[in-house]
Length: 407
Image 1: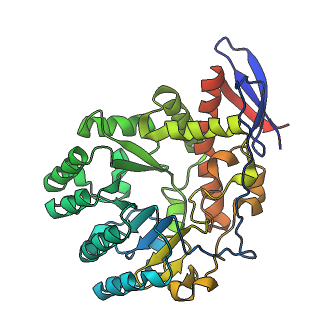
Image 2: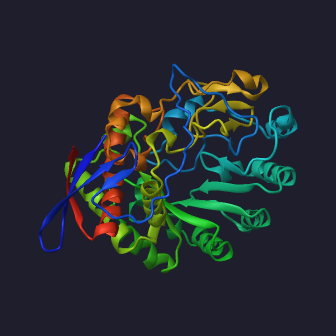
Image 3: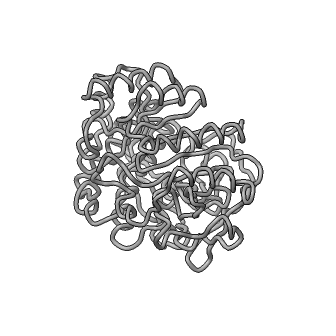
């Protein structure tokens, strides 16, 4: 499917280029040497064509529980809390003892998830050393709101070389909850973490209807934590419940335009900030290698058989943000061959994705959303990723995309 992009130069003149997101071909821009290659076809999950999981996962996501000491207004887990299992410390021992019965080889990455993971401190203290001893080459990752750090926790993070994603929305933090940077004790430990674990910590922001000015977010963090603070983006908010749909997840047309412009301008003026250059490089690489749409899995990656989310009782879920007592339980490790991801829809089965010019960037938004929740998430993702597409074209041509339409 081809699209015509109308570009405007500094002198006001207009020029057309053509882009095909299905084949990653672009006409009217000189890319230099094309490194076209053979791409494997990604597996495509749907409710009618479920996928199993690999006994040799590359990414092992362990959900400790969905309890949290914050109440984010757009929480992706809030609608699932009632379906989460409640585990005991003895479940950690059973989980570790049972690993050899279903897990083969060593994961490349092990992620430990809440809710807020450090609420489950007693379990983390037992789980991490045992996993690190068993899987010496695995990288560890924890996403946290940063409000529960102390010396003991930082020492464990350092001892086991754990990567930390610190969730904080800067000037929009009130949508998450209290600001740990305003609490002297909590701030002290966050600053210690940033100093001691340089290169292994990022501060991750979600863009919402009330907080999507990247320049303002960057300035906010720089004013409080210095110019070298490691900023990243969790992305634009997806919509998982009615409260988010009516609140921080609902961008009106003006808001979507402002979001698109903010993403575009940040990619142009400060592409290193928030890791935006990685998104740019991925898109430019798709053009240089002619990456076909058939090679794309879902954005989150959890549709891949080699990515698996389990709780401490061995239940397998759609993803780490879902509970195992409801529809998102897709199996159990004790009956591994019966695991079936039958709760998700690959974007190839969504007409709006197949006809979208930014599908190479978006990769389908959340794979289990439906109806109004998916529609609003889709609109948010389109504006966000259109800003990236516009920035990529600007870097290639020095011109601004002012219109895009099917050819």
